[in-house]
Length: 365
Ligand SMILES: Nc1ncnc2c1ncn2[C@@H]1O[C@H](COP(=O)(O)OP(=O)(O)OP(=O)(O)O)[C@@H](O)[C@H]1O
Image (tube, rainbow, N blue to C red):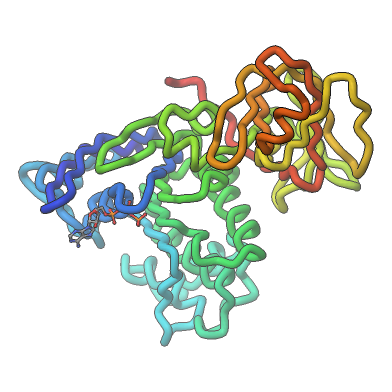
């Protein structure tokens, strides 16, 4: 269902004025610094907070306008927050069965629905456990199943991976990706996140919020690869090489449209032939003179020409013709005599590159 929202709200020291549209099945990531208004936007969409002026509709249904306000439980919206917030006294199965039960299904039918969703998120074997006996990643899967069992027309994700440790986050990200993208369910979603990787792997569009206003918006890869605001540049700051995933027994690569391969470590849910991006930090790129031989551990080597040399905090950021940036110390820039126009060879260890499935970038503006 298409989400259309226009929200204005004023607090003593903060004013929000935001318009959003997410087409049916689209995933919009809302990024922004602390205090930008991200949670305020989600709370207004969920109906937990009433903006002073609000016009919110989901499909044909008006949720907020000058005449009325549909309460949270009647909005048909699923919410997944940082913490799973499961009912502690109910089993996992009954936590998930809660939504269908509260919409009038019999216990038996609601449990059947719950089992289906638990299996969808890879948590079928947890059905009889108590929430207290789950790890953070397991609890978040269950919370996702619970949100989906309500068959929402809109899913709101509020930093869903932020509280998970680094080992659990990739698997839950993979589950979210599958549920949002691959099931053909086409669930309209708004995701609030600080993590550019979440935006990149889950969302087709991003909106960057600062001081209560949207300062930048567009297709995710485009915004992250060529940020127009300092915040987005600082947040993204990543090299992205897009193409098609090639998996092999030993690893993975992205094959670019012009036939180059960038090798890296595959995300757990990467499949051969997926649309994918190779992601690596500018600090992971070593820069050599254009005629140098590069040896060492398995590396991606790329010939490029320097297009810009910019100060970037304590380092110097080199931009190149291949759309790959590298961070160097001022000393190395001087040693290599790098200027715009210099020919260089860029080397990135495959171990410093991750290859993620990424949504196809839609053609609409
Ligand atoms: N209940 C409240 N009463 C008054 N001001 C609030 C309240 N909640 C948030 N604010 C203020 O509104 C502004 C936006 O807050 P919000 O929580 O939406 O930002 P955010 O982008 O979600 O931030 P973070 O990334 O830190 O979660 C901030 O200036 C915040 O201090």
